[in-house]
Image (tube, rainbow, N blue to C red):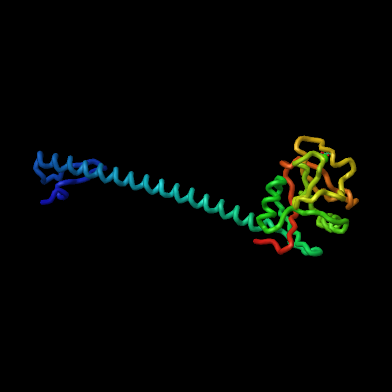
Length: 205
Ligand code: BGC
Ligand code: CA
């Protein structure tokens, strides 16, 4: 007769088989209880392991999804690329600081917009987007320079601008306006704005 044959489980408790001798019954029952406890602990540990692995997998998935979303948004941020004269213009539609806007334009092979003529000024105004332009007096207050290092000759400032009114007003922003020829303001470079980039070749992806 095997050990198992001598055990009866009655309402979850270990009972001796009616035909088993007394002492031997007790030993077998004890051994069986231990085995039951061992199995229960193993089962518990297995469940815990499953729960932990599920949590880890969920976190991994959430993380993957977030990265993917960011990549998609980055890819979609170039909204248009228009050819005008010898330049391509493309809009990065995420509000960003002047420096970040410049960095993003350069990453796509261009730079922040430089306005060299009345026609170009009017063309930009028609795009209907407020944008940083590649003009700054960060090096020396009042000495406005384009991002290619050239000095500003003709400016299309709004009335009363540039006024260096607040802290850090060292970057020029183009604000779409009805009098197309008066639309620039000097603004704090750290404030966010969309931006139009300019390049001689189509923007890189
Ligand atoms: C002023 C601008 C200034 C801006 C700052 C406006 O009210 O006219 O000169 O740059 O405020 O946000
Ligand atoms: Ca100003």
